[in-house]
Amino acid sequence: MRRKVCLLGFILCAALQAQATDATKLFDSLRNKILLVKDYSAEVKMKINVRFMRIPELSGTLYFKSPDKMRLERHGGLSILPKKNNSLMLRNLIPPGHATVIDAGITTIAGKSVRLIKIVPDDENSDIVLTKIWIDEQQLLAVRTETATRTQGTLVMDLEYGRYISYGLPDHVTLTMDVKDFKMPKGVTMDYMESSEVKPSEDAKGKKGTIQIRYLSYEINKGISDDLFKER
Amino acid sequence: MRQLLQIELFKIFKRPRTYISFGIVTAISLVIQLAMLTDGKSYMGFAMQGLNEQFDIHGNIINGYFITYIILQSLLIQIPLLIALVAGDTLAGEANQGTLRLMLTKPISRNKLVFVKFASSFIYTVALIIWLAIMTLFLSLLIFGKGDMINLKSDTFIMILQDDIMWRYAAAFGFALLAMTTIASLSLLLSAFADNSIGPIIATMGIVVVLTILSNLDLPLFNHIKPFLFTSHMIGWKGFFDDPIPYAAIAQSAFVLVVYTVGFVAITMLYFNKKDIKS
Image (cartoon, rainbow over the protein chains, first blue to last red):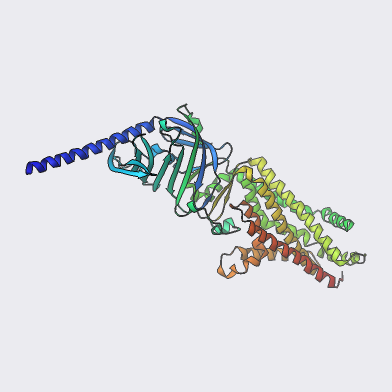
């Protein structure tokens, strides 16, 4: 009897170990695929939905250079990106270095079967506390990430792929993030109307904000000068 | 009528003090432009403190459109004084110089005289607003260049794309003209009551200052009277820089200003018709 229990325990441990190893392999493969892109420039259209912001859809060129340089060039216009704009990159929502990967099983997103893995970085000083990634195993693509950070709250990224699937680069990204209120003294601004009289759009309500980016075209790994990212 | 208007305009633009207003507009515009040129970044840093914690905003933020908005915001409080300098003098100045009685010996109706005085004050207001547009918008664009415009409200950040701005300024200056015409008509009314021009000028400013304070005090006590004060509607030009543009509110403000203007001119005519002209 004791021998049978030991055998069962051994099989269970082996199965869990194998599952963790599979999840780690899956995570490493995904990370390696994402890291293949060293730089890109992309024509984008960006829509910012934040309760206190009224910004029209912005068109421009989004430049990225590994590991974390990003710039939106709007050809003479103003560019607006989240403070740590590298959070717009999938690669920066995934913990760097060694991490513990936990397999959370199979789930569905938009009717598609995906594997959910949870990643806890080994580095205790990392800004990322926990990342969940929903992975399309067949195509090795992250379709959703949810990252809990120390400084930026929780960031959720939904990704849709199309023409640049081989690079793991999305055609459409929706980043949902926590936003704080914006206030200025009324005596300074001398408002004509209360802003509350102007109704915000449905998706701009609450303490969450979303940034939607449509990537119209990419130029990948063509080399981008560091000068492009310098403050002007 | 036309000849009478020409004479009135000649009188207004012949006086050196008429050009003081143009000089003051020039001076204030240049001072703010210089200040923004040298220290604009720290001003923006302070204004956008709450926003900069969450977003990185790059590009020519301190551009001509933004500077124009800042100047207009501060100048449109002082411009009523400049309007009153001339409009407050139209009837009272004549009375002070003893020429009013002489004028009324001519075959001109008193209503016509009041209307011509109002029309000449309006033309002066148009000239001042055009000068304001040149000194603020065109000069600022020349110095600071173009760009998307940021408009900061007390709890909202609005961004307007640069190719969507010029028509808003045209509408805003048009609205500012309407607001300043209301001031001109108020000055004209006060001018009819007085026999020297200092009184109407000071009284106009006093009324504008007190009512502006009431319009901006965020106290429930005044909330019921605010919609009836013309000073609450004088800043309607700002509505053109909102998103979405509150057309209904702007139209209501324009209506209130027109009613006040017509009312002030009508009361002036009524009073002036019955006034015993002694000087």
